[in-house]
Amino acid sequence: MTTKLQIVQETVSDHMDQMLANFKAGAKITVLIRTPGKDEADFLMTSDDLDDVIDAVQRRKAASAATPADAPSAPQEVPGKLEFFDGKLMPVIDASRYGWRRFREHYDRDGYCDNPGRGY
Image (cartoon, rainbow, N blue to C red; front, side, top):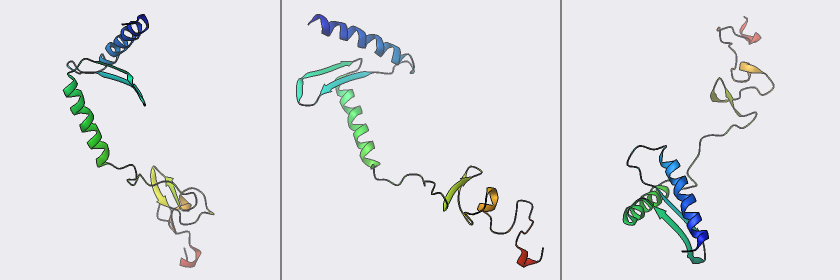
């Protein structure tokens, strides 16, 4: 083993211990560093059995395949059409108005009707 590789192992080991301190006792950690196209340059350190590591990677792969990247995300704000108000995404009724009046057609929060055609 080269001196440089030994230094890398010691450094990674120290960091692995620091990361594991944030998890419950019994947690395992694996560090895999790879360079695509250079299989002989892979670096692997683990506190676990390699078969268990492979099982964990396959579980994560299956879980990410179950939630495709093109799955619909949360609705986005569209200025003038769909905007956040009081912590909720609401349709804009009248984009020329400000505050709650953008999202209410006639009545304010107290029930007052601001539509002069209704005679109030």
